[in-house]
Image (cartoon, rainbow, N blue to C red):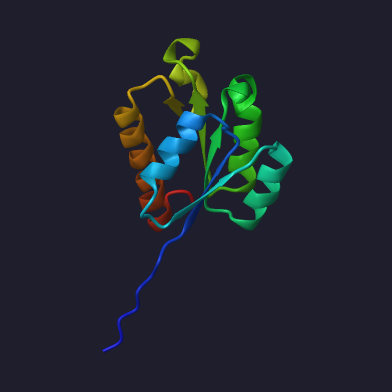
Length: 134
């Protein structure tokens, strides 16, 4: 009897350069199937996303006012991607304004932030398996 083992890989791309975020993501994903790439420029992000359509994309606070533009571009051209806006404080933004995009707050307790991040990542992974984004 042949047993086929499927390994599911996903990419996480980020323009977030916050050390806390990087530390939390990397420690959260130490033993996982996810690959993380930290990108400095939007053009580089788009270039990479075209290669890997199943991506979770973290955007920094500077995208607060154009989350619709960038988020819409990503979801329009890459329907299997999800956009997450990473902010310093919850007092700066009403999450309802994010629409379908997720929001993470760096001021949260590190364990709570790590838990939310992992939940987000694994929910995304499960949704891809069940074709939610298709």
